[in-house]
Length: 162
Image 1 (cartoon, rainbow, N blue to C red):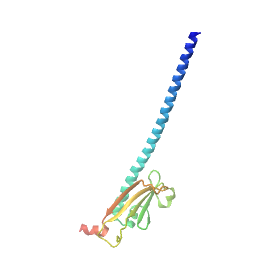
Image 2 (tube, rainbow, N blue to C red):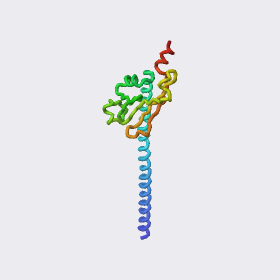
Image 3 (tube, rainbow, N blue to C red):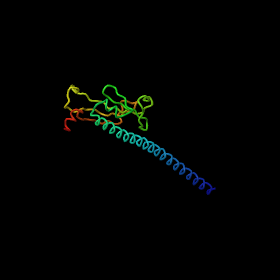
């Protein structure tokens, strides 16, 4: 009888140990799932930031090449849309450019917005200032990337070349 009780207590101890091991593995796997999901989200955000940086630099080069003129800048980018002095382009979720007529399908918006001073139109010898802002279309208050720009007006730049 005594051997039977001792054998029963050993199997109960083994069952308790196995329950603790299973609980430990379940707990660690739950932590790892959260860590991997977080790493995937950070990777997506990092990729979006890299793409937005490249697009902003591309838009800045077009703006510089056009001498800060919005109409000439819009001519450089075939899919652009102008409204006043701003130039806007639309991109899908993988940062491929979309035509302006498909902006309903856009995921990101890239805009070149001029920073007009009090007498920016009259001053030909001052710097033109603008900024490239890339935002998600549905979350216009969240900025993915912002790049400030400055250049001399085209007429002033041509005088400096002489």
